[in-house]
Image 1 (cartoon, rainbow, N blue to C red):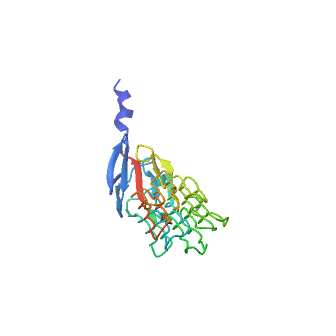
Image 2: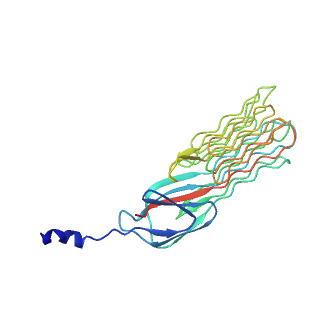
Image 3: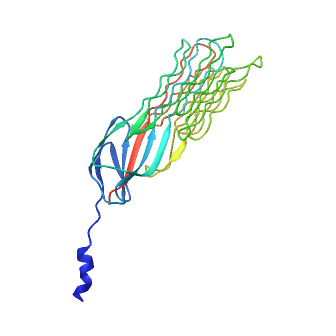
Length: 290
């Protein structure tokens, strides 16, 4: 009967990956490293197959919303930061720099477009910052296109929303046409999960919703677009996933949520107002540790 123990005695225990960096949490048999600021993910021990791979989420910074120079026409919401996710990605024993993209600044009251968000990256995987929301140049009915980015920024009067990058985000909403007498709402910024809504004569377009991801152990939505600003009392709603609300009469635009990649809201257009800032990005890495 002793011969039956030989297979057990010769069995080799599996090796698991060991790493440091970021804020580490445990869910079941998995470790999750969350990076809210730039740092390093350091792999000191590489597990044997299939314990030598990771799942990742890389979200770039959201863009700022367009600013307003004076009583004018709706300002576009900022586009969400680009979002990339995948599983089964092989590792090596090395140090991986982690870059967390900052949110873009909202356009100033001098009537500037919102600034694009900055990229986030891990292991040559790079997500592109969101595209800035557009300003309008005053009562001359001269609008601007939203900027291109991971998700595109919303446009102002009679212009086109910025283009998002396939696999990372979606386009921003268009500005309202020149059908007088009202062209007050800016386009909403694109989100990781949906396009931004067009601005209308009565209000700003809603920001596009973000994309849900469960890498952290719970379903969280990232990458909502910023709402378009408006002259009326209906600034666009920020997209689910950290998008900031667009400004309207008496209410300033709201910033995108930190570490969500959300776009900032476009400025209210009843007077000189600043667009809101985009939210910073995030990187999350998950692997089996036991």
